Image (cartoon, rainbow, N blue to C red; front, side):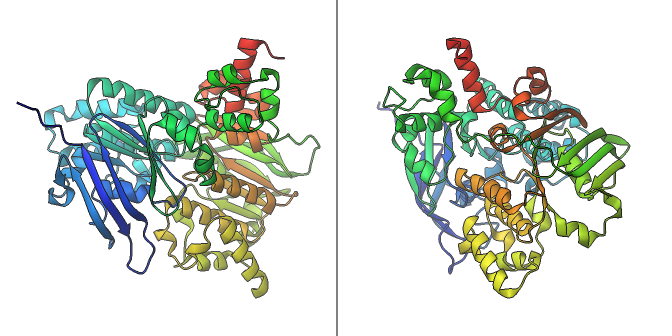
Length: 557
């Protein structure tokens, strides 16, 4: 008897999706299969429809929105609409880009329990399964915490734990490491590797941070700005044959591929194949001694001249629910400085930034331009200070992109039209002028939240993870736009997990751990403090890691 070939786990055929009949298609004629126990990486620029694809694969779209979908999606040969409500969600787990949008309960433990109750998990075994799921992402110590009190990264870990608790056959992860500290992002990949040795399941990862995933993905799928699938194949073919095209689309390249592309174009690479690892860069470089110098030509140089003080922070602390979140932080921030705030998830970064903005009341003293922050009138303070929230939806108050910007803009009509056109084009929102802010993709929402804080020319800009969910082009445009928009008399203060961004832009890095300041100095000094990096769950930026490999293997001075 001839055995029949097994069905794919998931079949997507000619999938087309749009939110309204008079709007452009978000996805166009997408066709692909996912096999059992396969790991797939989905890449694409911001707004290319990656999250929409994930929601269609989980049957959230079009059932939960007034969307128009054609084509078909089948799970093990069965069309998704034929499953009972909630049935397919046990088999296809989804971790959304915005974890807040999928929580239903008040506490961490209750959230996992709610997920398990929905799949009729045996009650007597539930406690052990909850502990198991929380242990997988290292948040068992948060078991009894209120979800609203968690940091963005801790919420992301909870969303991942909720999905893993169901042991799905297909796990879809939408930007799973975006809010995680570098060490937690790396550990997530290792956790999934360990789980796959015990259980057979497939993973589809939508991610801008490609480097974490290269060691486990077997296939890459690339969406372009039109919502079309233009590549479906192996990672090596993807990044070797299409590196230039991917970069032009704004898709993040693995750091080794990006560096290899620059070296090859400069004639400094022996092989025609682009390197997938640092070791391959070293092995195939023509002139090892000049590699670092060549690749670091655009790295930021720290300002050396002292400037007037903007912030003087003395013994600042903050407590919530009798829990000390910020402990005795003292520092100064000077005019013209770009300050990065880094640290592990839940270390107090966002809370401290809100103290600096006067959004919450803290103990100790904060002076802003020489005057106590509490003495500033709100209108005067916000005319000089802008704050970009971690969740962009927290600051939208109008019904369209253009109204959101106009509401923030205090200028004459002629200037208003000029600034609107310029900022929308720069941040890739020119085609979304009349769209409702809540209808935008997460990446587009983030760009709009930055735009509304820049149009008034504030001197100080505090940004909480501004490049979250952004492709390579828009990430650079957001930071470059902010640097140009903020005057030399001001300062940019940015929370980020991106060590490469810190290496390129920051004058100083504030590293926090458990509410304390454990480092405040230049990035170049931080990279030499291995104990601080380990304690704060940070990793070296790519160029510093490459430099250390070169020094270790070739004794390059």
